[in-house]
Amino acid sequence: MQKQKRKQYTAAFKAKVIKEILREEKTVSQLSAEYGIHSSQLYKWRDHALAGLPGLFDEQSEKALVEKEIAWEKEREALYAEIGRLTTEKLWLEKKSRTVYKER
Image 1: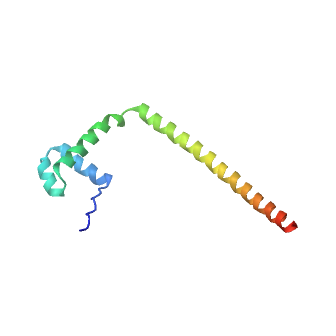
Image 2: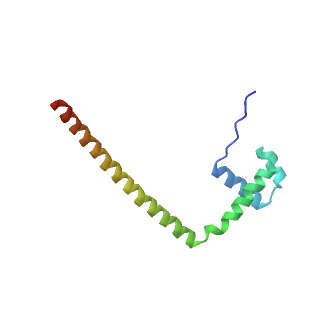
């Protein structure tokens, strides 16, 4: 017997469903039947969206995100520099090893 793959929904789809839940024009049970998603899953999406809502208006979290991105960019530049240095070193060692083995 084959396992069924889990359905994966896009963030845009989830946002659409959450908007409908928050409008309260239809019940969660009606939306559950309409979209074929269990009502407990819809409640989880709703709770997750409502929990993240205060962070949308928080300037500190935005600053923290910018700081993280700057730190990642610095780390990325350092890693690229290290890759370049190691590549140069490897090529130099290959060249030197060829000349040493040719002399013997």
